[in-house]
Length: 161
Image 1 (cartoon, rainbow, N blue to C red):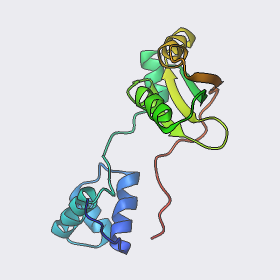
Image 2: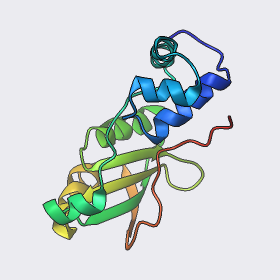
Image 3: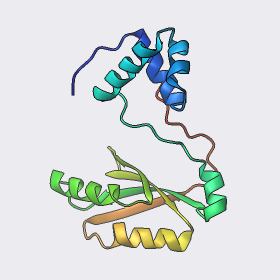
C-alpha cells in the first residue's frame, strides 16, 4: 500500500465518511468544498492507501435482536495457558472466524483476549463457548460479563480537522 500524507481535506473526507458513508459523492464534495471529480479521486486514493478499510451498513442490534431473537451480548476475557506467539495466533485465528464473535482484541496486561460475542440466548452462548473455549485445551481462564444495556456504541475515530 502506498503511504500518503493526509491533508485537512483528506481528514475532513475521512471524518464525513466514517459518520455517514451513504452520502453521495456530490454531497461529500460539497461538504469538503471540492469538486466531485476531485472528491472521487481523493476517496479512491484513501481506499487504495488503506485509510478506509471498508464501507458497511451499521445495523441496529436492538431492532435485529427483537426481530431475530438476538438478545445476549457478552464481553469475555480469555486467558491462555501457554502464551507463545504461535498459541496466541492460533486462538486468534479460531476466534475471528466465529460469526458470533463481533470483536476480538488481544490485550495486556491481564487476560490475553477480550471478545465481544453476540448470541441469541444463554444456550446459544453456551454452544459458542463450547466450540471456541471449552474444546481448546490451551484456554486456562474465561470471565464473562453480560450486557444489561448498551449506553454507547460508535465506530468513529476522533479526528481533528
